[in-house]
Amino acid sequence: MILYDKIIIPTMTYPRGENSNLASEFIRGLWQEKSEEERGFDMYWESQEKSAENLAIDIYLEMEEAVSKHEELLPYLDDLKISILRYNRTIIELSVAQSNQKNKDTKEAADRARRNAHNALMANLSYLSRAYVKKVKGPNHWRLRIDEGRGNRDRIKDWACGCANFIAKQEVYNEKKTTKKGGRKK
Image (tube, rainbow, N blue to C red; front, side, top):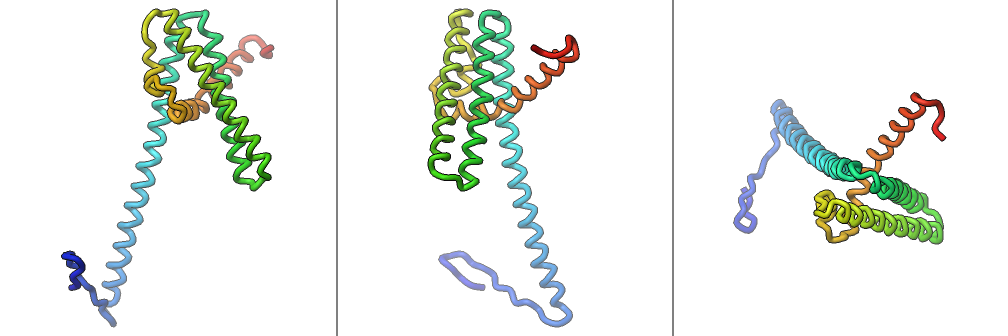
């Protein structure tokens, strides 16, 4: 045994000869345990990401349900959907520009486009929120759930990215439904 700063670490001598398989099995077992722990850690973070996306979708559905009860607010919701999808596209374009080692001007242009799309997203979210509060003459709980009503850019970004795929799938589904009913959509 070795003593390091009041921590006792047992030393191990590895047997040779016919007992060496025992040591190999022991080490293999330790690596197996470590591998299982790492897999569990990865699964934990994947589930956290999925639950964050599900939360974003839940908030979006709550918002859509509340707003859809008021016909005059639907254009605000449509503008917000477009902003969310545009913002998500600019994030992807920026990521591609950064990973492809493109020139500095291309990266700056992609970042500028992302920033402008984010500003438009925040503006459209605020327009919808204010119009909703004015219409119902009460609070909107979905807006508080997005970023606690503070205009936190990172929380809004996370929410928009979380529900962008859902909105895109919803739009494709609605388009297919329209196409089946009455021919081509105009």
